[in-house]
Length: 475
Ligand code: ADP
Ligand code: MG
Image (tube, rainbow, N blue to C red; front, side, top):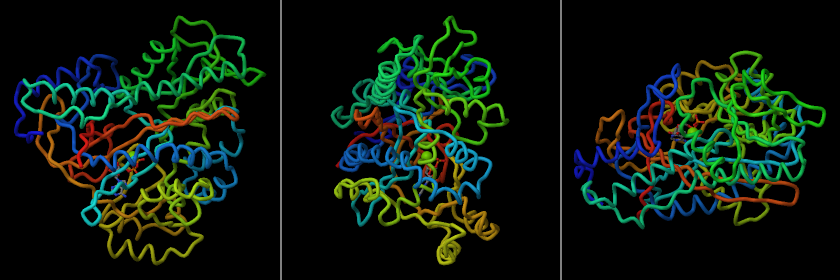
C-alpha cells in the first residue's frame, strides 16, 4: 500500500461520496430526524492488522460464545460473583441483578456479542489482547460492513491514488450474519410456541439515537431477507403499546405503524445498557415487562450481567473459564487472549493490588460496571480515585493491566475534514449464538475495526473519539 501522503482531493471526495451513498451516516442532532446528518467518521485507509491475530480472534469466537452462554445459564455462579458488586452499585448493576433474580430463563436464547481486542507486541510478536466482551447492544455491524466495502472501493480504484491488494481486505458479512441470527431465532420462536398472531421483532432504542442508521440497516435487511417486521420502541413507551397475555406472549399494538396487533418473537436491545437509559421507573417497568415475557431477549438480563466488568475480571482467575469450557484446548485459546485483571472486592485482601496501582497508575485501567465508552479511569485519575474511595466503594470497580496497542499512521476523516494522525485500532469480532433445547447455532459473524488517535485513552465512536475503520491483513 502507498503511504497516507498519497491522499489526494479526488480520493477523499470519492471516499466521502461513497460513505454518504452507502449509508455510512450518523445523525448530528438528537431533536430532529434525517435532517442534520453527516458521514460517520472513518479512516481513509484500512489499518494494518496482523493476519494471524485476526484469524485467531475469529477462531476463538465460537468458544467465547459458548462461554458466555454457559455463564448466563449458571444462576448460582452469577449470584456468587455479582452479589457484592450489585450492592456496591445498587442503582444500576444492583437493579439488573434484582431483576435477574426475579425472572426465569426463556426456552430459546439468542446472544449477539462482540469480543473486542487490541494487538500488542510482546517480544516483537503481535499478540491478541482482549479488551472486553460486549454482551448487549454491540453496535456497528451495519456501518462496519459498509466501511470494509468503502476501503475495498477506494483501494482498488486507481483514480484514488492508492493501491491495496484486495486479497488483504477480508470480506465482512457482519450485517447479514447478525440478521441471520435474529431471523433463525424468530423462526424457532414461531415453531416452538405457534403464536396466535403474526410475529415481529422489537428493537429497543434510545430516544434521539444518533446511530439509528446502523440499526436501520438491520431493520431493513430483516425485511428484505426474511420478511420480518421490526418495530422500534424506547423502554419508556413500551407501556403504551405492549402487554403480556396469560400465555406469556408479549402482545404489541404498535403506535404510529400500519400494523395490527402482533406478538414479539425477539427483543433486540440497542438501549438499556447504561443508567442513562433508565431515567425513571417507567423504563424499569418496561424492562421488567420484557423480561417476564416468553419473547427471546437479546440479551436476557442474565446475559447482560455476564458482560459486566466484574465477570470478566473473575474469569481471569484459575479454574473459572474451565468451569464452563471443558475442552482444554478451547479454554487455553480463550485464556491466551486475556490480560491480567485484579479484584477490588472489600471481602478480599486487595491491599497489594491497591498499592501496586498507586505506585504505577500509568500501568493500569480502572473500570466501573459501565458500558459505552468514556467511563474508565487512567493514570493519575486511577490514583485519585483509589485514594478517595472507601473499601466498599472500590468493590464496584475492577483493575486491569493497561494494554499498549501497536500504533500505525492513518488519516481520520470527520465532518468532511481530514487529519493525518497516529492511531491505535480495536478489533471487534461479532459472535452469534442461538440455543433452542438441543439445537445450537454458533458462529463468528464478521468484524469491526475502530481506530482512535493514539493519544486518546478511552471512548468509542458514539463518544466522538474512535472512528470506523477496517482491517488490512498483514504478516
Ligand atoms: P466500555 O464498555 O465502556 O466500552 P471497555 O472495557 O471497552 O469499556 O473500555 C473502553 C475503552 O477503554 C476501550 O475501547 C479501550 O480504548 C480502553 N481500554 C479498556 N481496557 C483497556 C486496557 N486494559 N488497556 C488499554 N486501554 C483499555
Ligand atoms: Mg468497549
